[in-house]
Image 1: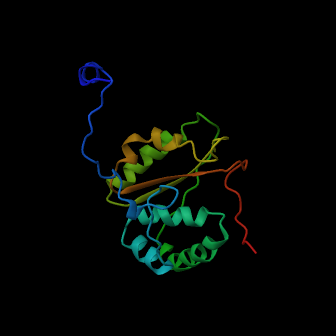
Image 2 (image 1 turned 60 degrees about the vertical axis):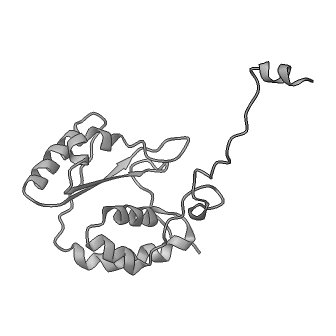
Image 3 (image 1 turned 45 degrees about the vertical axis):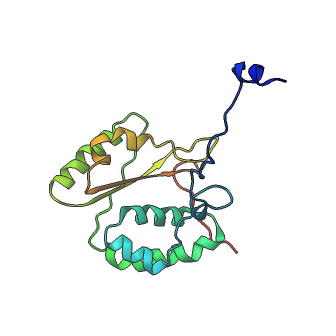
Length: 172
């Protein structure tokens, strides 16, 4: 083939420079997910007590986990946090869909945070049949409260259990 015909083709691709990888391979696992630092129970408790909301979320995930290797750490975190819960007030709110639970929680929560107090809202959401994860409906209905710096909202999936969360059993 002569050179003139080769250059007239619209399909000619010029070689470029080699591109570096777009993701740092040192921080990924084989599945392609970023590695998360593994904290000890004491590190979890210290971070929770200092107000670290990201670590609090990770600790709740650990407590909700059904993996046997998470059970011991989760129990230790709970035991070490219990002495600090004596000044907390816990309120349970339940009702049929559409009763206004999220509206009430947001209004009440904004009142509490308006007084300079901290608030944690732990909701139990219906689970997706496909992923078994939370649908996250409550958090989206509490728009103002969910972005308030003194409020923490965490939906937990029912994982198919009717009437709330299932009781976690120690794995043998």
